[in-house]
Length: 46
Image (cartoon, rainbow, N blue to C red):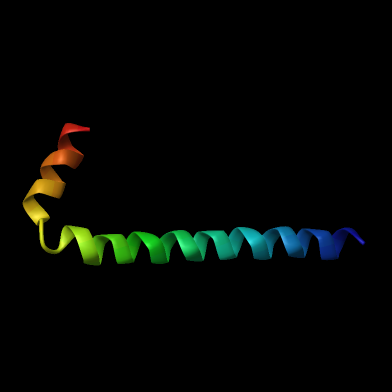
């Protein structure tokens, strides 16, 4: 059925978005907190 297929696609997309957001939050907590100025400088350069 098409409905179940669409639900599976939506669930996979939502899970990917959740994992991506969690990864970004952990990355910010681990890397940005100790070296806040250096990360901001590299972001502004790129």
